[in-house]
Length: 452
Ligand code: CAO
Image (cartoon, rainbow, N blue to C red; front, side, top):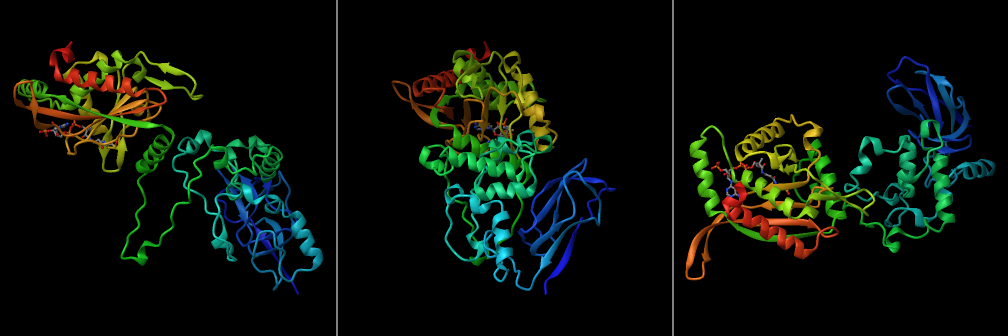
């Protein structure tokens, strides 16, 4: 004989009268333990009331708009001995009656109606539902999608459901309260996609998405001792941005060397005359960047969000990549064209300290036109920096080195600075990049030009 148990609202950290804004199941549905039954929305958050057991939903005790509080019974679930966790979401319980199974199938909204082609990337076939559940491919490059303003309004259950179907919630119009996306909206989207012949065509075949393989899932401890540590918040954010930029921008890197022999002599002199202000080669690079941006305006530009227009900037804000214990940040020195070497040196010192003290505000990292990533204080001969979108180029700087340079008559020892210019090939052609890099190097080589 079947047992019926109640599913009650758990401790929701609220004083009560929290409205039910979404019904996630229908009477007759087969539910798993902890599956969301209804969604509640308080002033601060939305939450789901989970099924207290696996079974068949016999009665929903609440309807949309009802106010509930801790302990309110929201549903009755029949736990028959035979009602185990279902083998597949659409399979009827093994020993359920014919009537029950019909009801369960008919009202299981959903996954039955979804074609295989709409599922994410294929996984190995198997009978274990966990093992055969589609694994979500990594989405780290989709940084915009995780900005709070861009996150679609949907409950965790609907998110999971959409993920399982491979539906991008950003494309689904929400018909629920305050534009909330419901399960029905997801179903309607899938149906419309099917009708349009979109869902049956894998994204890759249309040349659209990256269609990446799922991220490898490896139990590293099988091979030796390991320790797991969460990524820092900065690494998560910068990683998502870097991955998007690397995946979406056709990067090319142009290498160049600047003869900074004179520049270094001048810098040393400056240091002696201004012992309280550290002036590193980076300050001169900021000056050279401004001069090169003025000479090559397409480097001081950004594609707009349609990708069809180039926005030329008439200001010169230079981003500086700063390495901090928690990860990479890129604060911006504003109006670098209006500042002298000493002022730039002072600001560079300030923003680096602010970055390392974790005191940078969001605004400190916005509005950059062009970035410089200097690893010159560390070492290396060249590298391929990733463009800081929506900028269109970035200058990587490696460690200067004394080299024999042919002057037409003999080899001369010259201090050479390696430069690595990555640029967005959608906006900048190779020849233009080579001209920019050469011009940039010339500014550094001829200290008079730089100081003009
Ligand atoms: N060649 C040789 N020496 C250099 C040099 C170069 N290209 N650039 C700097 N140096 C020297 C400096 O003169 C300084 O020497 P002293 O200690 O004798 O004065 C020393 O290296 C250390 O410089 P610094 O790194 O403290 O200062 P900076 O102005 O060059 O750079 C900052 C400041 C904040 C950019 C840097 O500290 C930093 O964080 N760099 C890492 C950026 C990064 O991670 N980029 C990779 C991003 S991935 O694309």
